[in-house]
Length: 106
Image 1 (cartoon, rainbow, N blue to C red):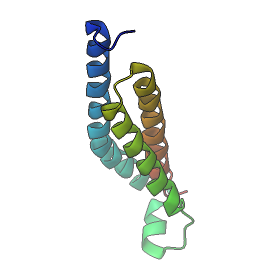
Image 2 (image 1 turned 180 degrees about the vertical axis):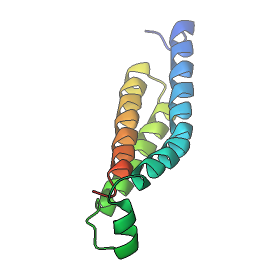
Image 3 (image 1 turned 135 degrees about the vertical axis):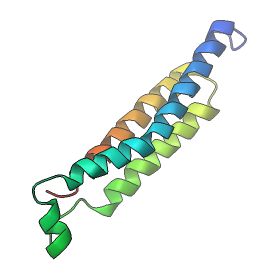
C-alpha cells in the first residue's frame, strides 16, 4: 500500500481514534471494576482487618505501562499493520489491568 493512498490514511485515522477512545474509557472501566471488587464477599474483611493477599503491584504498573506504550505506538506509527498490532496489545494490557483490579480481593 502506498502511504498516499486515501483509504490507508482513513484506516490509520480510524485506528488512532479507536485507540484513543479505548484509552479514555479505561478510567470509567477502572472505577466500575473497583466497585465490583468492593462488592465481593471478602472485600469488607480484607479492608477492615487487612492481611489479605493481593495482586502484586508490578502487575498493575506493568499492564498500564504496556498499554500506554502501545497507545503511543498506535498514535505515532503511520503503518496500519504495526498500529493494528499495537492496538491489540493495548486492549490486551487494558484487559489485564481491569482483571487485576476485579481480583484485588481474593
